[in-house]
Length: 276
Image (cartoon, rainbow, N blue to C red; front, top):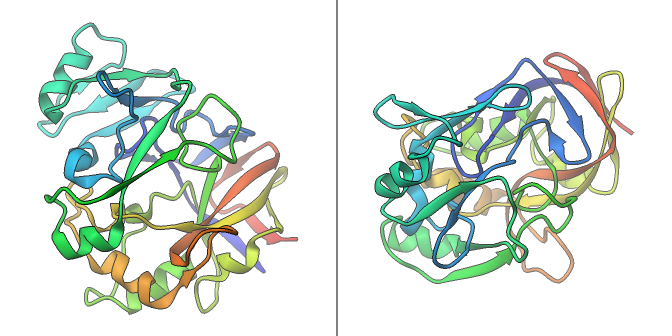
């Protein structure tokens, strides 16, 4: 497979909206400045994640930009911006979210997130409290970031096109699946399943090792800023690509793939991508 790099996306604060970039450095921890901050519940110590939409879907109404280099800024729904190190930041975010939170770059020793069962969310709606599963962060990543599993998340344009063709709107926005890198490919879609165990060479230096398909939670169905909610963004892959992401797990709807960094490097939009 050969392709090109069609999108670069960074999320400075976990579960907040992020930003599109033209170029970025990528090291063993992932994209520079990606998911280095998160909101942590002051009482439970759990990391806030829109994977539990009943509690945290409002996170996707906030946008984080900047970081490495430069300061991170959080833009609120009313257009105001705040800095993570401002004295009132935690109180402003706690009032907005209705939960006592602190914004931090320190990963808790036993970082845990809550993941609502996506089938239950589809059946009951995002505003309903449904059963959640607890999971550890960063099982396939080095310490120090708030990634869900591995440092880099990939998705192909062929997969996005396949999903788009299966939903009433006829198109699906890649923002719903929160990829770091979007790879332009010509195929039938869901080829990321076949990338597992292989290496992707991007640009002059970056080498990634693909480790697992990405199981999808309820997040793709949620409103992302001005992008309205859409349950078909999860229902379509549930019909088209229900696979086992890792040994020992049940089959789940998957979109894209997780990867580890074998050799760091800087990447730019338009860089060639080659599957070794």
